[in-house]
Image (tube, rainbow, N blue to C red; front, top):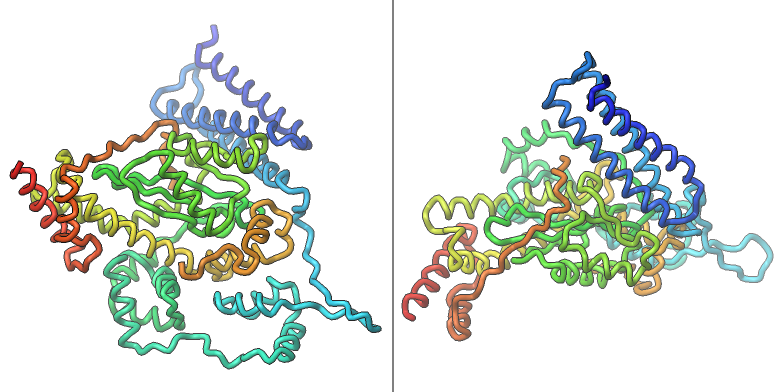
Amino acid sequence: MASPFSTDWDVFLMVIEALINECESQMSSQDYAVFERLLERLHGARNGCERVSSTLRRTSISEGQSESVTISKVKHLSDTLHGIIDCVEKRLYDLDSIYYVTSWLPEALVHRSGLVGRPRLHVNLVQVEFLRAWRFSWTRIYFTLCVSRTTLWRRLKESGYDFSADRFTNISDDDLFQEIKGIKENFPECGERMVIGFLRSKGIFVPRHRVRDIIRDQDPVNVLLRWTQATVRRKYNVPGPNALWHIDGLHKLIRWGFVVHGCIDGYSRMITFLKCATNNKASTVLDCFIDATGKYGLPSRVRSDRGAENVDVARYMNTKRGSNRGSHLTGSSVHNQRIERLHRDTTRYCLSNFIATFYHLEEEGNLDPCNEADLFCLQHVYLPRINRALEEFRMGWNFHSVSTESNLSSYQMWISGVIQDRFAGFTGVRDILEQVPDSYGIDPDGPCPLDDDTVEVTVDEILNPLTRDDMQSLKEVVNPLSCSSENGMDLFITAARFVANKIMER
């Protein structure tokens, strides 16, 4: 008699095979809803493979079947499903715009004077100046505007363009040393590229070798450690800017009542928002999202996990973009790699300092995470400081160069994608060009996780123990953003003593 395992295994294989055959037969469909349903089933099947594989590692296999052979079969099946998921997602993106064709190249604009001869190519000098202001190289400008080097050179000379402008900022070695020292104090884990990104976000543009020499002098040990940490790049494809935004919450500070809400553009890796809050409400995430769309335009689609904090964004996207086209995609965090990679770097570069500080306060007996008064003081002091650090990190990230993208920054990739005509028919880009044609929607000043997506993460909000007058007095006594050589610990202790005294006076 066949074992129950063999029977269940055969049924499981039949279900997977039927799903794969259905996907292959539907690949020519033009119905977006069909692919959305298939994608949901594929994710469920792949999660099933992962659970089966995990079970097989813990139990022995009967009927004389080798455990290692069965596990390898399950892994092969999981990899096959992953490949089909990629194909289905690619099909979803292709259906978004009838204008988008991967093999189509843009045509350059021409100016017809009515005279005999070939019409002159039109070069938008405002765009050229805009791109140079964002530190695009001339080679990248030729490519972005779809003109030859000689044509662009002639048009610039005809317009009297000033080629003598210095590309780099005039800053002494001592001043540059102090700038980098300040960055490394706030973000000690940052490497060379991220430091350059922070400098660029402050309007400081210097050759890379100057930054490298200073970092090697200031932090030689971490330089050697970073050389041994190679980043594994995963294949990722979306049509263009604002095609897909990834949103997710980061809960590394949840022990102390903080949640970081983040969003990243999948095409360019540009962080559109990164905010810390003392709750995990859907309304908070929606406020951050709407604020980001005011700066960068409304994306065509948004991907998130199934957390309850994302329901308002899902409702907003379905209202604005339509409910039958996959405006909001949900799934496992393992398919949300862009934001998961961002979470890793945010924790390492930005939040690790605060985590170490909070644990130190606990070890010294100055902070009890179960005491609401302590948490109130902690949030009063550190919420503004964390958000200031997150905004500095966001700007530094968006300005840092990406080695696998010809050393373009996230801002440059986003701008280049918006300007290039081949994305003009794409939903997210078209809206940007219609809303903000001059600035292209930008303000220049401005590891695989566990599959726990369906778990609702709640954060209890801390009640204010002070009266209105006492709260005003606390603000006068403690300025959360004032300078502190102890990363705000002295400010927290002062605030905690103030609150304790006010409570005892009652």
